[in-house]
Image (tube, rainbow, N blue to C red; front, side, top):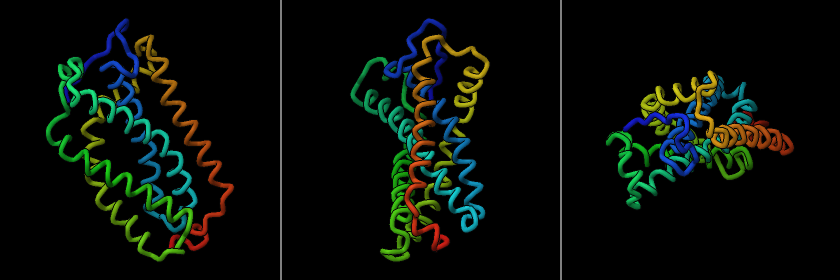
Length: 202
């Protein structure tokens, strides 16, 4: 992907190319950490199923924000916006795997939510669907994540060092807000006694 440096004083709003890239990079960095944590629970999912479910809920708002930022750029680029056209598309490989990443991600969370809500009420087919979604999702998402690792790391480092553009407060607020929303969603999920937890994951 063509990389851009957002210099102080340049527009860093969500609708600008620089702002959109920063939002995508920052959200990607957050997701990288959260997905790493949920990956740990996958290694012992039967004993860590409650933690796995909670982290899944925390992930939903940041994931939605990431899909919004990348989807916005996609629409602007293919709608012929001259600014986004000049910025260029992602590398061909990343464009080819993007639909697989999006579809498998949606399938992974939809099947996970179904299991959280209904357990095995509608049969173990949902467990199989969740597992196969993960099998498809994992390699393609790893390719996607590591392809953007450096931009995400640079954006996070700029935030932590205080070198981020002054106009980036709104972007940081969106990312922090998505995390807060995720934690709130996870806490709200505790009100419901998921039958899947008590089945021990099937």
